[in-house]
Image (cartoon, rainbow over all chains, first blue to last red; front, top):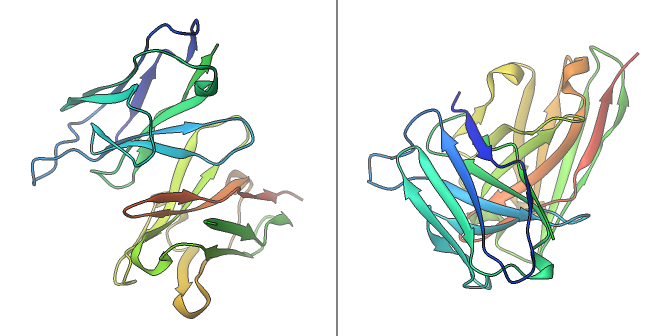
Length: 111
Length: 115
């Protein structure tokens, strides 16, 4: 199975400051069509996960533009340009290039 | 309002069976990939099974192959997970999730396998 390794697992940040989360895969996530099936989710306490980014770098509808995704191959990053109070929660990456689809361990963003 | 509501969890003895249900509303469930994902206590998320939108393909993680079956009822906008020969290591919160142009998750239902 593809192992997704997130870092850091805990990320204390100050309001208004940037934040960055890394997700590394044990195999390349590049698919035969040239894309990579890598997504980022946010889970606030007591809520279901919400997708922020799909296809490495595409923001879902309604997601603030302070969130951005980048990367290729085995190395991917989620960046928040300026952290707001509502961004507190757990962030995790998912790959579905390979079966079984696998998750990162999650990064707890604390403000 | 978009909703996925799981039900059917509970306490079951090792070797027993349970059937989880997931009722979808507020979006076009039939055109989404349908998934079951679980999270054991203190562990990370694990994909259990998924099904293509048209139901033509079903996949399972190795640890549940031959024991779990994913199925759907489009008329009822529902997804199911039949779980047989349950083991202690199947203890987890089970989430229903739909993937398509949008992604939706339920709140989860707890399955506890214990004597």
